[in-house]
Each structure stands twice: as C-alpha cells, then as structure tokens.
View 1 (cartoon, rainbow, N blue to C red):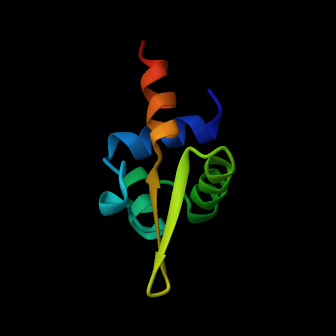
View 2: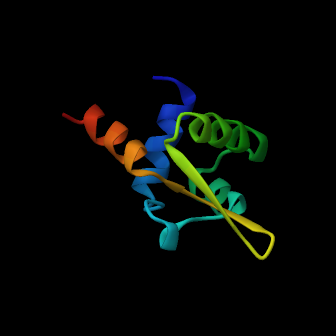
View 3: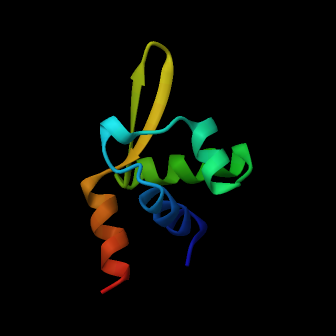
Length: 78
C-alpha cells in the first residue's frame, strides 16, 4: 500500500473527515507520529488526487478527508 494511502486511512481513522473536524499539520503529525515533512508530502499527494482538502482561516491551514477520500478508504475494507 502506498504511503499516502496508508496516511489517508490514518486521517480517516482519527476523524478528520469534514471541514469542522479538520486538523492542522501539527495536530496530524502528533496523532500519526509521523515526521513533519513526510506528513506534508503525503498531504500534498492526497490534495492532488482530491482525497484531502485544505481550508485556510486566519493564516492557519487545516486539512480533512474529502468525500472521494472517504470512499477510497471504505472501498479498501469491502
């Protein structure tokens, strides 16, 4: 399984699945125990595939899994 898909599953499992549940990169690295640059790289790949969306508010970027990302994760379990 590619790193970014494993990372997508972790984001889904920690509940970052909607704009109101989105997390900052720092929160994500804490929850996933992943290095900052590795997490940023995975997030960028997932944004490019429309599995993760970024929201910026007051200069703070927060990330959450999109509906496409949720479908991707759930399809892995079926």
